[in-house]
Length: 123
Image 1 (cartoon, rainbow, N blue to C red):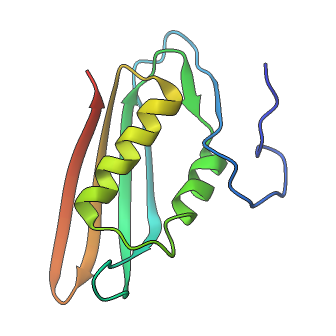
Image 2: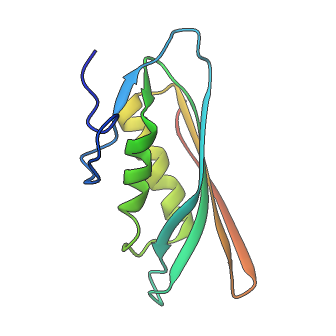
Image 3: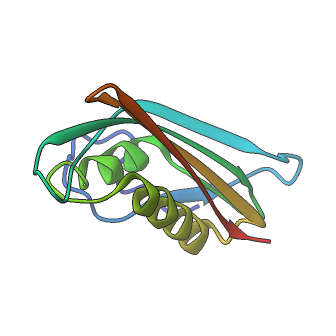
């Protein structure tokens, strides 16, 4: 098995989503974080998100520390909630080649409005 870029290291520079071989019996994997931040592309104000990823792996799973660092790359990027969901779905699908990827992104209320977006990749 290839050595993880992140697991067991103190490194914090994002070098790409890291994967590892998943047991063939695993049908679905869900990963959720409520500590995701990006910027509103119009106002530049920070938006806070909860992101949930559900994927049906073929052979690879995402290593969680690399996912945390991946999310941190959006901290200073301006992106709409809807585009954020689609970007995550594409990126997870590209690195895992999962059979199907579903991503839900919920922007925590700012100005009294909560926004949720669902995006898919694969099947």
